[in-house]
Length: 425
Ligand SMILES: *Cc1c(COP(=O)(O)O)cnc(C)c1O
Image (cartoon, rainbow, N blue to C red; front, side, top):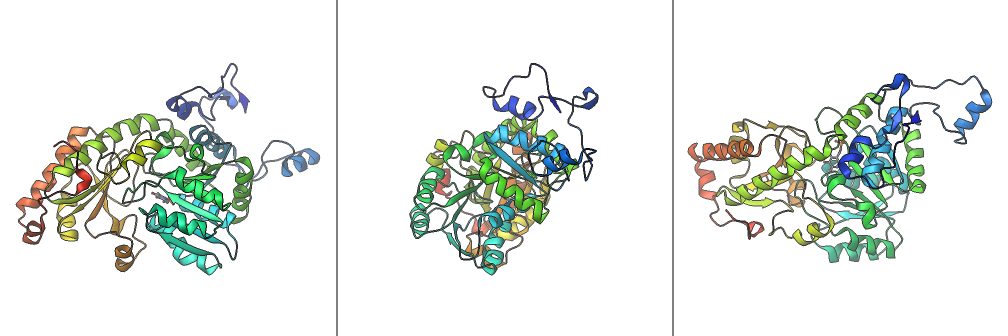
């Protein structure tokens, strides 16, 4: 595909412009303005020498879509623009990206240091799969930076960070932990799904490899699975090689869906973050709520770090209701403008308890050990009007109160968690 005549580099362009034009300043066949979905499994050559050069990577081109596909490469170019990365590799899901990165960089005898709070599937790789291959994993208390630094200093090959965490919205000090990792020569990997590239660019903070579940905010419509990995060309060549062999390639239809979704990322996030803040502030005043997790709240334990390394606080809020599951079961079905589902980052608002969403893979004992209480509910705030979302949540809580569930009402905390300190009613 030819570069569009007169197309300027995006170096000085803002993120909204990058999201629209990244990877797409090209002239497509037939002068199509949209990226074609190239469905070909293989690519044909009449000149055997050229074919051989392409296969060896000495000439540009495609051989077989597990190795590379034009639609998928456009998506890779777009995330490169947003994460300010030299190179990117797309996968069939966020978990395919995460597991492939871990298996690319780890071998028998290696050690990983990470935190207890991470996506449930990631936690399963750490607890179940990596130990089987002779890789040891140490999961630290997420809030305890001293413990994480101590464990890193003992020696490790990979430090895995997820910030903010799912679903507890804890924030890790990326630069501080990168410094500890660099002292022992470890590769630092960060899951940037919750923050999105608009709010946080971990590569600029010293991280080596950034991962996104493109299923979430990047695609934004809850209708496609995908994963993206960004970093230096040297590191991404290794990740790409692993993808060629394990076969977790993204299909071109999904790549197109993610490309299309990413163009509106900035507009969506602007609205979603505005509503997320409003909902978090309201939840702080709701007597049936024991605690609220949102990095934008001044009382959030890592608020200062969040302000320093993020340019926005994201569109996920979580809270703990008094009365646990009994309250959750009455509250959630009452919501009119929300799906109750195990997804996030879509244009529709989505509510879900940790038990059936982020930590569905874990047992009750495992969840409690991870500090995930049964009354923890995650909201992925959508693009609906802020006032409608506020009214909806308020009427659902009013219903819980009127339903007279005595267990719930007796447990009601009248004093609100200190997370909310400093928030006006
Ligand atoms: C959803 C999610 C994943 C997994 O992504 P899939 O696309 O569902 O495989 C990983 N990390 C985080 C933070 C997520 O929210």
